[in-house]
Length: 442
Image 1 (tube, helix red, strand yellow):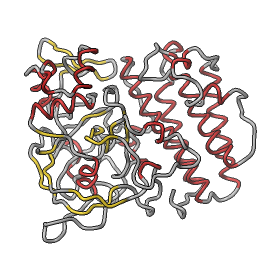
Image 2: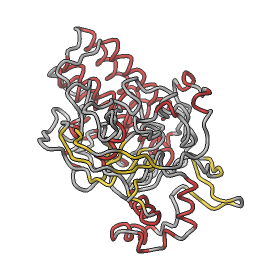
Image 3: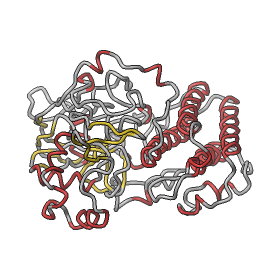
Image 4: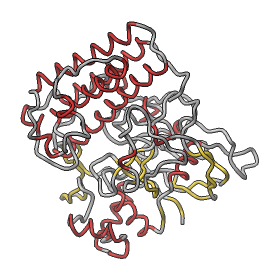
């Protein structure tokens, strides 16, 4: 938390309204049956998730600013994700969809009213932004739930304001090759000057990074299809022990949303099967699959320190090292927009890896923000001196040690919560999330 950062009540309320409209557009068209959906370990029932979003605003804004009872008496037992077991969310005595939406709407109204009473200070700003970004994260989770179940493509609120433009669609095709990135002493993590950081980004600390070569763009569908067609899923020497166990248990022989059609590979996006776009980044692959591809290709995944250096550092004038300053985004300090990064559902899918040259990092790496989350080789651990954030103590701490770090955001990710230091984290078997990867030379 930046001790000096504050936003006005109107600015915070506008972001809450935007997040709310996005949530509604992701669930409103679903049937009552789909609001519950079948049990799966990797998703939540949308009915529970809507209530959980409302509970988070209530618990982390209203009840941190005022001593007050819960709106729903047993709300903690129903909607606190660290109280109700995952499987129990399908059988709990949840409110119906009308009541769940009514609860969310009431909580939002009370938060807006509370913020309007007096000018929000840094603490109120932090709590409100934390809750907005939490809703943004669940918005992306609603997206992968719809993808997992094969529900129709959602019609996103606000998307009409960000239609395609020539600068984004002009460049299509592959973007091959590597760039050289000089090593040096690099400060990994978030800084106190940033308006908002999550606890796992705290704080920037020096790491020594050796020079390396990184791909200009993520691995494409065409490149990954060559690995599949070469029998990569059946070659045990390409997989680590846990990855091979996963492959044998699942029987995977290609990415989860691929199939072989009469004209070649096809991929499913939501409820539609379409020919595989060769130059878009491969998406919905897990860490094991990314690692196996790297071994097959004679490459490797970047560490998260290498990834963040490539995204945020700038070369020194002599080209032999890096400057001590860091960029907030790969392209600089400008807020993400459709000409810089494929975020916010503006394109409702991936773009070719050659697109968006204006968003290149200082070293020439393209699409380091948006399009697909990128797996790194790094396990998810706290940075030196890590302290639990208050009040959201459960954001990171329960997950350290057995997840892998992803960086950069994907096409459905909300740009307002991203920056080069943002760390995402999933177990290495997850391939429902919007993840791909880029590689480094050995």
